[in-house]
Length: 265
View 1 (cartoon, rainbow, N blue to C red):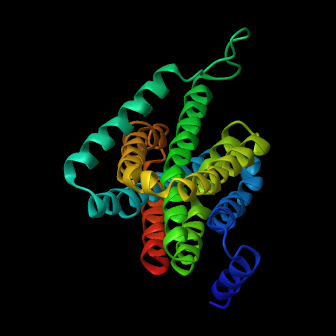
View 2 (cartoon, rainbow, N blue to C red):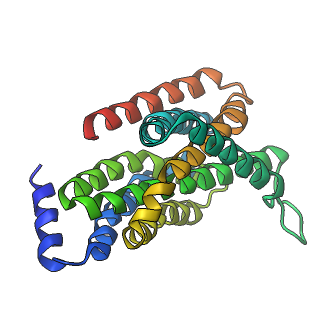
View 3 (cartoon, rainbow, N blue to C red):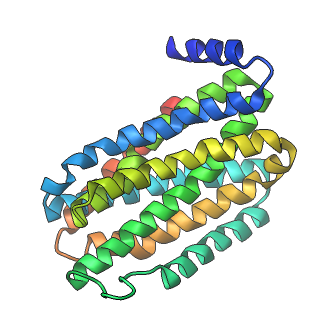
């Protein structure tokens, strides 16, 4: 790809001795592609309930692959099982507590709409939260890679960015289809992507400490995502009679993310 050496040259020329700036701009690739991936959610207000369940299934399949190939396996490779298991459980606990205390209603007026809508919006918020947590270790990985070697750091940033495109859609689509609020969905997708360059800068600044903490962050994100998939997304996508569509979406999401992971990393 000609774009890769071009990005490397621009970063090297403009920030020759500034790894923090290099880490920031390289990891912005992921943030931008996350937002681009969310743009099809603009059509969400015109999509049917069946498509919502198909999309939720897609989110589940993508999150399963991300959890294993992008989080758990790399964490094990750079640490050991006990660290991964502990951090995985902590990720589950974080989501359980988030689910317990996440506001589901307006404080004064109460929830506006049906109980079905209320349940689905809660799941949508959990998906957005889990994806944001997942992007934290990705940003750290890019920041650490840039410090070691700008070439490998840029390649990793592009690979993560390509994988982030369906993730952005997974965050934005539920809000545009369920709440009919495209703006909220796109802003959440943008926020989930923006955390990557912020963490990349922090990692580049504190690379030795951050590298030590990386396996904990990877496994924690995996635990959060697997819990959301099993406890929320799959049951919710099967609740209203569209089980086959939801399962088809899961298979498509699984294969798309697996292809992206094996092709670009």
